[in-house]
Length: 316
Image 1 (cartoon, helix red, strand yellow):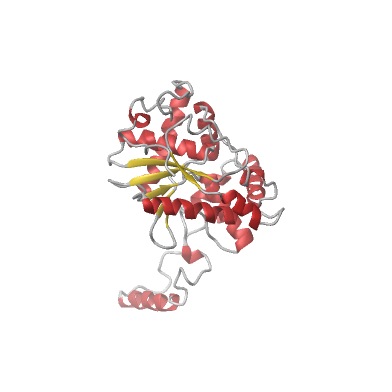
Image 2: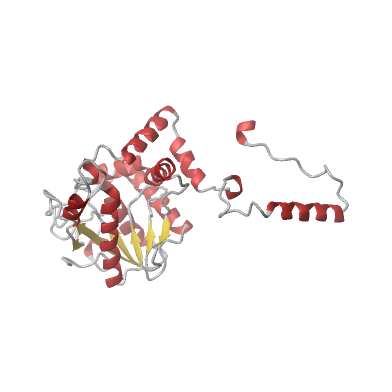
């Protein structure tokens, strides 16, 4: 069910205000005062730089793309849309942005907030009632809720010519997901910045993958986004993700920079130093060794003259 036109270069929300202070507001709506402080401009420039780097590194957006920004009303999705609108004005490629909100029919949901703040599309689907009916009291609702949301968004994307689906996950989300999969799923797997859906029909992108959550929080406060809390995920104190987030927060307090180091590790994977035979040819190491020895013998290199093994950082 569509309520408004897509956000695009021709739309006032994307073209009438300078990049450093542009509100995400539709004409006539009450919007936050522009922020011109040097601190804010530096913060915005940093977020633009990190998002732009992620987009370039993973080729997230290409010329002619129609990008659907999934807007929940939380700080992450507001920031994502704001930064993409800013990048859109100076990007070397042309792309359209379509802001979409999934109305899950949660009781007490302030339906007036988003329409009064910006122009967007609404998908109406009563996932709240389904989740509450199927999931027993006290159990986490995230898995089912996520599947239902994903299905609704994929369906809208297929029906409206969407080529990329942009989500607001940030660096901490990716690191937390890795630990959740390790601790509770026995898998070394995180949340990729760019993903092809299981049916091969949709590409999901996460332009904020390099952005620390604390900087999104600062940006959202400076822009005074009207945050809408989730009454499903946000109301569950027993979530495993909450425990993992607390663990990372405690680590970061004691060892500043640890989250950044963990994320860096996800970007520098040596499959030869893990233990998954499906991703590295361990049985083939013998053949590789024999080939190297044969080549060394043919070149007349005596045994023992090869360079020694490099020291690992923790051995120094």
